[in-house]
Image (cartoon, rainbow, N blue to C red; front, side):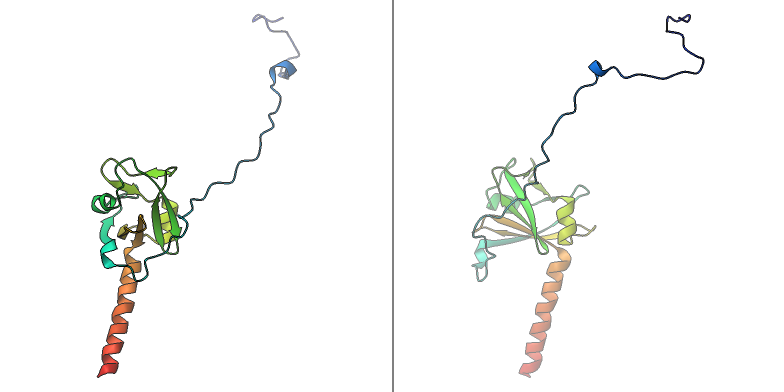
Amino acid sequence: MDAMGSPAGPPGDRSEQLIGALIPPALQRPPPAAPLIPALPPGLALPIGADATSVLLDMARLDASGRFSARRLLRALDWPPGHRVDAVVIGDAVVVTSSATGRQSVGSRGELAVPAAARALAGIGDDGQVVLAALLDHGVLVAHAQAVVTRLLLEHYTELADEQHHDR
């Protein structure tokens, strides 16, 4: 034994041995469950030919955390602070639906967060400008990148100009 009370071995010998009683057995774990993908309510359809009074529009700017405030639309949808919602991307829109088991909730100041992945998939850029449509008959809030709505309006104006040109 050396001065520290350790067993003496050849100089430089630092071999270590594992003590089997101190090593726990390997755990058998089931594979992780597939992530749940939020589903839209059955029968959800965009309001083709819907009454204009059942659709409310607004614009908002996302903050650095991807949140926007839409108190007027959330009140119209009857989504108070703490109300659970889910957000899914359909095409170039983020569709937010009420869900008792929703992954997100309306914030205390009437704000909603759009997950970064949803923003990227829907083409909501760094400027964070969104056009919001509350579809009251469906209980749905739809967020579009401003560029999408701008493109749709320009296409509409082009069609109007073409019609006006043909009428002359």
